[in-house]
Length: 240
Ligand SMILES: [Zn+2]
Ligand SMILES: [Zn+2]
Image 1 (cartoon, rainbow, N blue to C red):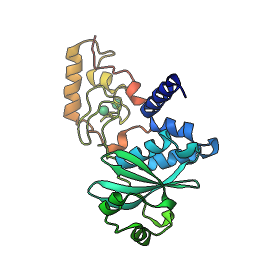
Image 2 (cartoon, rainbow, N blue to C red):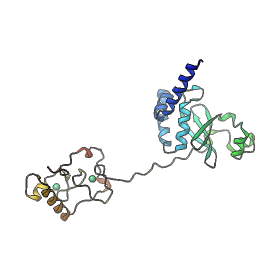
Image 3 (tube, rainbow, N blue to C red):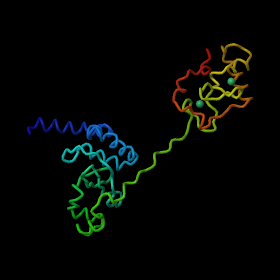
Image 4 (cartoon, rainbow, N blue to C red):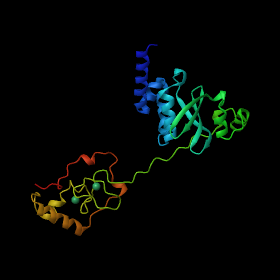
């Protein structure tokens, strides 16, 4: 290969590294395995270590095989570093992972050559490695999957938390008189005895009546299951 081709390859590799992992997976696997391969990514997506390993695997498929990653197995862990087997459809690859840096050591069946790596993970030698890990990657424990970060429940439209009163005009707020959508029902006109809200003073008077009646605070179940409520106009947020 001449220099130009090598440069182009390097640029391509750098571009690949920037690609989102799901895209890399779609490019890297056979069409019929795409869904299963993406499901593996989804299972591990909250584990930075697993994502680094999958990214390394899919950005540089060993021997350019189109095999999907089936699972990630822990061989040994020590002080934030892990020896991990990436099980592909018909090959098992051994990786060293440390501080989100990932190094492909080779196929799992060949074991670990490097004595310093063996010693670091407290294997006496290659025989000890096989004795302790067993020859079957499938028998090793899978990498732990952290829980998805819990997002606090808030009103989809105005963003207040559970038990809080909505921002006036929020389409999720329930009317305390008729229990319909407060920004849609006619209670504001009935309560004020007018046919249209035209002045800020009228809006303030309505807010007072509303508070006297008792506003219905946001409850988790109030959020519509379809996210369209937020697109509704806010009829009394900007009185004209
Ligand atoms: Zn709201
Ligand atoms: Zn009403």
